[in-house]
Length: 197
Image 1 (cartoon, rainbow, N blue to C red):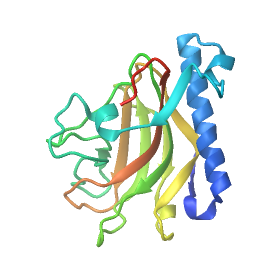
Image 2 (image 1 turned 135 degrees about the vertical axis):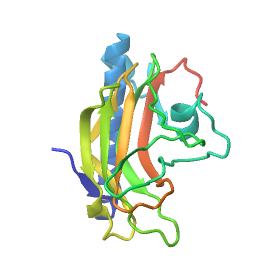
Image 3 (image 1 turned 45 degrees about the vertical axis):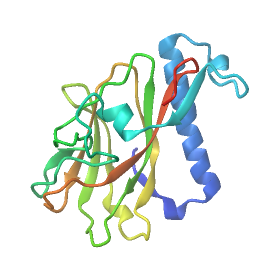
């Protein structure tokens, strides 16, 4: 069962445990795909696979236009209950990034980045895979809004393997005409010889 756990209700150690679970999962998935022994992937001293925080622009948007784009921003929310791509170029244009051959990606949490006078404008986040957009996971975000910080962890991390297309969408509660600032807590796993940007 997939649901969002509000960050406000989690101790720091519980948050660290959820992030650690996502890190372990993505390392093991990539190790399996690259035929790296599990012990080498998880070696704490000299790991064969490293994990880093994702960069919205360089990991998901390139080689699409990035002029004026610095962070998480969805397609403009044009209609109530409409589904909108979470990844958008600065045009804005829909982006459905593909995981690189030597990487795996895991999403383990979400933050709704509200502007000073913004209303709660997103109700759901849906993780699809491939051009067919087969559903991998779905989370209800409205349970986060009563809390001071609109932030939560997924009960189950959502992983994408090498060469999978990430088709992630949000459902609009309000037609704002602008993109929503929905940040996903994301880790990227890659071999240690990979240059980290």
